Length: 485
Ligand SMILES: Cc1cc2nc3c(=O)[nH]c(=O)nc-3n(C[C@H](O)[C@H](O)[C@H](O)COP(=O)(O)OP(=O)(O)OC[C@H]3O[C@@H](n4cnc5c(N)ncnc54)[C@H](O)[C@@H]3O)c2cc1C
Image (cartoon, rainbow, N blue to C red; front, top):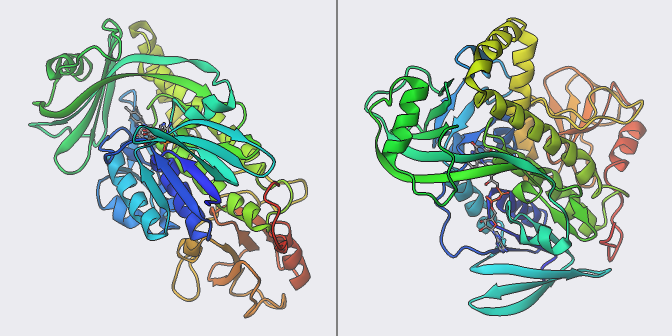
């Protein structure tokens, strides 16, 4: 029997299943599709996601598949500089979603995840010890059981529906046209975006000659199933950008609508939700897949520790308290960007003036860069804790020539001790479940969680203070672990 069933092999489910398998958990990943996903829905991979992928040894390979973009341009006036982000990845990478999914699938398979394609979850029930799930495979329904189940089954989540959870929110935008096209002339900016009159258009290069085009026109609102032609897209692009750059050869076109919604609870007993199943918003800012991947990175080690009996009380519930506010922030940010991008013509001069003024204060654009890229996301700290607690861990250089995010690749906690710190009895220390490394950078001793956030920190602590810091995150394993915490 699997310890965890993950429903939905999109990016969120693939990363989560891989993390659980790496932690030694028996995982089954159920996916309704029978074929490989070839959708290029998400095309922006932001800096924090690249760091999360770096901690799994995948970032450089993914970055090599696309084009690096060092800045965002809003309203043709305001440049949001990503090149100053304090990250090994001071840019976003434009690459089709299927490239991210390909790397995550290969990793999940390598780590032993059992992936079942053509398996559609139709119902579930839970009791005190586990979850039963009804799965339709080749027309027949069978029941599978696991200690926990995670719904990463996208915006129309059957798992969310089976839990009876509401998905409150509102419709954000309709009749958005998408295509991947070739262009005769390359635009001068890497990302090209503008609103003019009632038309909005956005162009982004994949780096291999193909461009993603998004076009929207207030005066042409049609249902998702209405056909889209390249000529229709071209006419909106010309109105918004003044040219179509010689657009031709659409490899696919689509029309979609999007909502802004978030489920109130990410956990109901032994069933959890992550990714689009838990929150959805418009593509503005390109944060949907990124947020789902970061949900998965937050949840995997907590669920594994809960199953192994090494989770302190409340660890699994911290998934909700940490990730729900992030989801809410992303909905607000993306909604704000969407409304600016689709403002009415009479609002534009005012917005441009306000944006230009705001951009003069670098703090505004730096804040925007930190939030959109995910680099500024943190989880707060308890009263009295060291100020670094809860922050994203920077990729510290280590005395052995390596980096912190390489040291995180086996999925464990990492205790980082600055090279100069003596007297804490930490030299050569080994602690169960924790890898100890020495960094070349002066600063506090920090305990970095498997998801790359600082769980505990202290300036020149004693050995017993370090042990107490670790004990706040890792309990001694209980034999025959209770998996209900
Ligand atoms: C036009 C567009 C552009 C976008 N651009 C960006 C971007 O640039 N950056 C970004 O971060 N995000 C972007 N997004 C959002 C991004 O695509 C999603 O946030 C992301 O795919 C969510 O991943 P997920 O794994 O949570 O869900 P999904 O990718 O939706 O995966 C869910 C999986 O569950 C499977 N499934 C569904 N129901 C069942 C069931 N009952 N049983 C078994 N399996 C099931 C589905 O087949 C699917 O494979 C964009 C979205 C759109 C529409």
